[in-house]
Image (cartoon, rainbow, N blue to C red; front, side, top):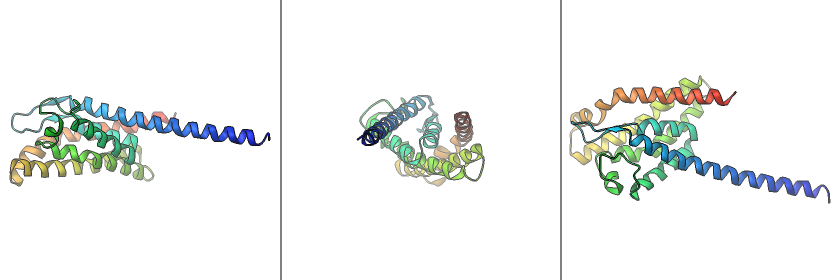
Length: 198
């Protein structure tokens, strides 16, 4: 009798912990969408392209590395769903809702789930073989590739531009800023990881 009671209490405690963990993960995913939305509103329209300069990519990289591939992917799918429903989560310099997803920057947005999953997977794989900062740097670079690939491909299709015009309007103007975002995301992630070990 006495041995059965502690085991039942242990089972109840484990179940409660599982629910708390699931609730915690859910809150993190929702919080991640709010973070990306806030970074989307830190944006600057450029006169020579319909694609604005924003901090969204930085947020996606950080969310992917922090949450991991599955939760990061889920957070970005939720973010796109929020935007499709008309919530003000995209940059304020364009139409909201589905119209924004189908606009000139739609390819960048649709790349975010894959980019977050890539960042989360690569950083966890690389941490076994190199430093935190280097693994975060490689993960951020790897995750940026699908963002530009999807973004430029959709932009070329949407605007009916050739490769050189697409490069000039959808890739080249954003590369200097992307280098800063990649470095900042890697530095912040590696610093937070180091603090968590203390």
